[in-house]
Image 1 (cartoon, rainbow, N blue to C red):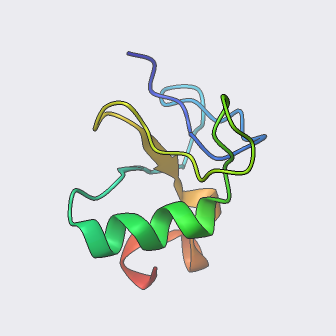
Image 2: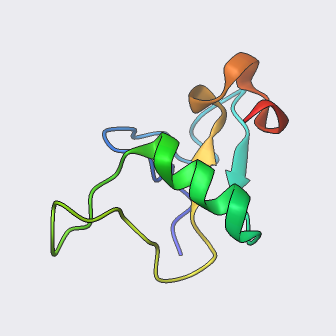
Length: 73
């Protein structure tokens, strides 16, 4: 699996993005929903539906958090 940011339009990749942190999408349903709402990524098959990753390995880079810290989200 490629460790790249799952935010739309972001091309940051782990190992190439110096000084960036990468955070796994939470498993907790409430926090997970908040992250998906904030990411605003559309489902590839149906653009009107919210995106739901097929596995737990997706990550979001620190560029998409206030002060680069995930706990503030």
